[in-house]
Amino acid sequence: MTAGSGAADLAGTELALLFERQRAASRRDPYPELALRRDRLRRLLAVVQEDGAAIEAAIAADFGQRSRDETLAFEVLTSVLEIRHTLGHLGRWMRDERRPATPLSWPGRARIVRQPLGVVGIVVPWNYPLYLAVSPLVAALAAGNRALVKTSEFTPHCSALLAERVARRFAGDELAIVQGGVAVARAFAALPFDHLLFTGSTGVGRQVMAAAAANLTPVTLELGGKSPAIVADDAPLESTVRQVLFGKLANAGQTCVAPDYVLLPRALQQPFLALARRVTMEFYPRLQGNPDYTSIASEAQAARLRGLVADAAAGGATIHRLHDEPEPAGSRQLAPLALTGVSDDMRVMQEEIFGPLLPLVPCDDLQQAIDYVNRRPRPLALYLFTRDRQRIRQVLRTTTSGGAVVNDVMLHVIQNDLPFGGVGPSGMGRYHGREGFDTFSQLKGVFYQSRINGGFLLRPPRTAGWLRRVAGWLSR
Image (cartoon, rainbow, N blue to C red):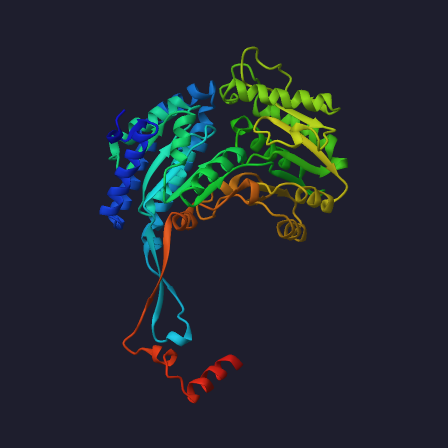
């Protein structure tokens, strides 16, 4: 489609022209008022709410099999709630923020004025193709920006549906969906955006950051990593297993904040395994043709996961089937597996798993679990299961992760008033809520001088009295 349509399969010059069109529009209207920002958010809400069945069908076509309920809950509902939350708070977020003025400048006033950045770029992954497009877009539009959204080439059905709906509701100089493969993605990352948000793997994130650096474009990177679940010896085991298995098997484990592996007391490993098998069978009584169990999104991803299992087995790990039924022939609905006897040199303990495989790592005590986490790259999330407040403080204060949940998994992501993001190799920057609004805003410090101007105290000629005043301030 053409650059003016709001949706495009573009590269090179055409993509640059679309960007320049948005930049020109931003310069014509550098500060959209509250009413226009709310109108844009309501139009985005209409994009999400229109014909949920079509969204479910599009994502299912991209995955091969995607649980309808997971699409409804994790893509549509989460997007709707975040838009509504932002609509309810946007007026307050836009107000100038008072800050105390330095005594030397009294009685002047200090304020923070939040301005739109201009044109924002958003790169969307394949695992949650609707929510991970909408969520950062909510913050970008709320902050008054224009936006280009590069969707994943691995979810063509969802991308096309999103592009068509956006094109009917937004002018191309407000919001445009960009479709295409690797060449388009590279051209997209090289554009001189005022901010670029990327969600995806750490390796590709490095490439995106390098491309953005040529334009000094600030970036927010939402990456991944191996998010641990630490189970203390006082944790209620059955509910803990249910929560861990829910996080591991939702979307077949293809979630950046899914619990990657479990650290637990040695004495709990066998009881955990027995419960994991029972809970898996309760969640998914059958695999063959089960509409609730999502398939792996591509054959390449399925082959990668099978390779992790084969590598672990070859290294001496024990593979535990968590379901009675064999893996459906010709299907990418991979059977859930637990792994014990794993070692650090196995690929399954080095790579982000992103699938329904759950390694169990026994520990002698909580400190050993903490040390295990701290020897590894900082994860996107950490999950702790204990009722002991002292242990909670200990783990939260002595480990570093992008976010954390106590006695559950993944729920920090859907807290609309909590910032979400990674740290170190799991990402940088934050969005969601007020922090997302600030990420896509220029926080301009402004000082308002009063009619009574104390600035004369700083100007020459400086007398002995001035020196005494300075000495008095320094001695306080």
